[in-house]
Image (cartoon, rainbow over all chains, first blue to last red; front, side):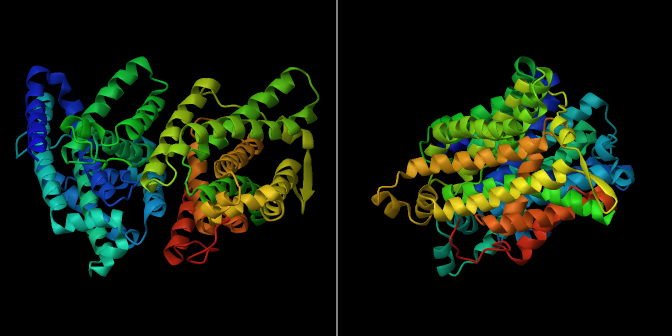
Length: 313
Length: 297
């Protein structure tokens, strides 16, 4: 426990100080944090032994919600856009969750994939509404009522995101330690016994699904603001697959894992873009296999020195 | 229009049946959903196209392309499929399903890039076999014999052949035995590891065969693997995983649904398979042709 806190705190401080030394990195770091949030959502589901290949749905839904609200001049304030868009994707997660919690394993994963791909094609085909494959531009909103220049805005958004990540991580850690979180793990180990205890696995999974949808939505809302542009690619299965990759890479043993994974993912992406631009998904694939077979607890497991087998087998 | 849509649906359905039945067979026996299945399809298609183009370039008789399609499928299934099973899948049998999914997902990412490196990103056209067979007139519509006769025929042959193989031949029965009770089958002297390997190779070859047949009808571009995977999963899940005859019906259903959409609502043709799968799974989570606790294969 102490080690986890130390690791989390060290990560937080390192992240907070980083932009002071290298201003160019703020956007990349913000993107990493957004993906870390979505991967945190995946991690919650992985705790229940379920994997979603479709969380791009919530990521993109919230990003497009931001784009539409900004375009309709409904909200031109980042501090309003983010929570409203996150709530919208939470609502979507509640609707999808109503029926998806009835499925397990491959059906759970594939139904998520199917729904997200339906949304992806809608985004791409309904050109008049969504702008098709070109996507929509997101004008830079105000922040707490103030207009900022680009760099200032990016810096502030980074620190806001960092704060949001901290709150989200602490909340998820609290949730996982709560009876609801323990029941979630019981879905993975023995669902029947959970039912014998009088707990409804569907209700437990519904809560987790809602939470994971909210987390992915939060990440999507911020990424729309910071990149200033949304495209259907946010809903594509490759994106969803990356979230799963990040969660596994980071390890699901603790809430710092997905963020570690997201940072590492950005580093790999950066290097791969230089040295293996054509084959960087293959590089990811090889790394994924290496983690699963040799370090199943992920980066988090390596960092905390835990040899528990939570991450994999 | 309606007729044209029906013919398209038939050709398309035959194609996805081949891929889906391979996926279903592998799941039925090994208990693994192979996410890399779409890559076998894509690699099969590329190898076939490259071979057909080479046959054309060397001036060899055009009919040679047809046996080559079969050879290409078996080659891809045995080499690539066999390698994946031996090196990776063997280590994860009986582990968590999530883990198996992620391992095959990693294989998928590797194979997708590998095929880009080997075959490049330019589209391939190798429609010589289709043109060689010519066209046939059905109710006033000219349609290629390749799509109208050859493809459904191959699908039918696979369906009948697979049924016969699993029910009547010694090795096929060994596969069914291992599926039902691996320990008992092993005690009877069946080499379960070999059964798994060969089943996986057969499944992979069927996907590659689907790709090889498809290579003559469309141009090949990177990314065809992903679409095919989801589609064939939709077919397999609609039918009920592990159901072979059911997969044929579901493939036809989804093939017809999709080609109808191509003609009547072209914006939404990609949506139809997902919608069919979602509706079926909502109403019958176990698929159309499975009972809740069913024998697989």
